[in-house]
Amino acid sequence: MRVSHVITRLIVGGAQENTIASVLGLRQRPNLIVDLLSGPSRGPEGSLEGRLDPTPGVLRLVPELVRPVHPLKDWIALRKLTAIFRQARPDIVHTHSGKAGILGRVAAHRAGVPIIIHTIHGPSFGQFQGALPNLLFRAAERYASKFTTHFVTVANAMTIQYLAAGIGRPQDYTRIFSGFALEPFLMAKNDPELRARYGLTPEDFVIGKIARLFRLKGHDDLFDVAPAIVKVWPSAKFLLVGDGEWRARLEARARQAGLEGRVVFAGLVPPSDIPRLVGIMDVLVHLSRREGLARALPQALATAKPVIAYDCDGATEVCVEGKTGFLIRPGDLESLSERLVQLARDRALRVCLGQQGQAHVKERFSVEGMIGQLEGLYWRLARERGIDAHEARNEPSPRGTLLSFCVHPSLGSLIARFGAQSLSKKSKCACDSCGGGLPGLPVQRLPVARTVRITRKTGGWKPPYWQPRWLPPHFQIAQRIVAGSQR
Image 1 (cartoon, rainbow, N blue to C red):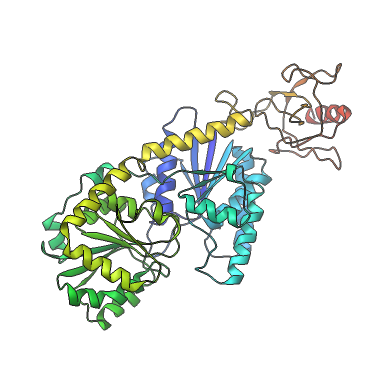
Image 2: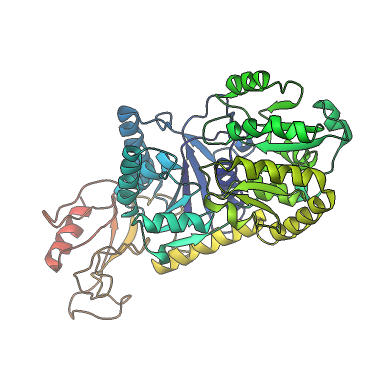
């Protein structure tokens, strides 16, 4: 079975790491051919494209697929994605992120892809933005949902938000936690040498944060409480991991607040270095107001570090109040300061929360578990649509492929037996594979040089790469198609 993933860009981020891990992991499973389409990755957020270099042919860049709204580039990207899907003919298109999620699903629908999946890594609408953007993004998501076979969410909170917005039905959603390689985090230690490299001493109470230096990530809130925390607990230091457009602004804030020497900007680091950096933290704070479920939270818990998070989106599904850390109402700076001071004073509490968090994460966030759940979902959806490992469309149909056409009683479609696509609802069957229907209408088997597109309006055909969609309830039109496909 051929699966194409689509994402807007491969910057250093949780959704991108999830997508790459999914693609590489699924490629190791039998009967799956998996590739990835992405827009270019530029800017201070870095790029993860290099992680795919050891696997030639897995990544294909679409230069016009960009994050900002750009009507011309968006139109070109849609046309390119549609052409790619028509030529490659994947059984499944699996999209990620906002822009690629919309354009990818529309393109897959236009190309006749039988199964279209979208992963919601974070909300595209909510209280973090104004009324007009919310209206537009909700409308776009509702439109794309018409073509979506199934949604994958990284947290139940995403399912609740999208259902409340009138997008999909409960049975259309599956939660699959964003898994990662647990072992490096489980083995991470509080390395004094690494602390010294960042100007931290063994006695310092290190408050860590892993996030892009950008709006909605909560850095301003942390800077607002930092002076008070330092006053109460002079050994407190702040380790910020990540880079972004706000770096110069936040560095200026640190100087203005008299926090020079207390705030360490680690900058953009390779994902492989994250476990060691989490290891030298004493607590991790996550103050984002827009996040599906930040990978930083389970990663910190895997390293047996307690977490403090805003009660926003999926944080509550990993930051369990009083068990693995503390949840705080977004913007409640007084509670944020109190909880940080509490953990600074109580080392035994930090150890207890960290150990319970580690056990919680080990059961739920392995990358192997994530890949297994994705694979199971793919095959379940494929079976529901009559695709199996032997019929999956691993290559474009060559010239002369034998097709069996029938008009199916329950699915009611013109079926190409190599793909078993069934989208019509008003026809009957006469073929032996369907087991009944109208007598005297034998199955049509013939070598064809192209596939056909059927329209109710004309009953005509358009070459190439269009899959049979539906057939009016007249077998004579099927005979016309047979004749047309032999040209």
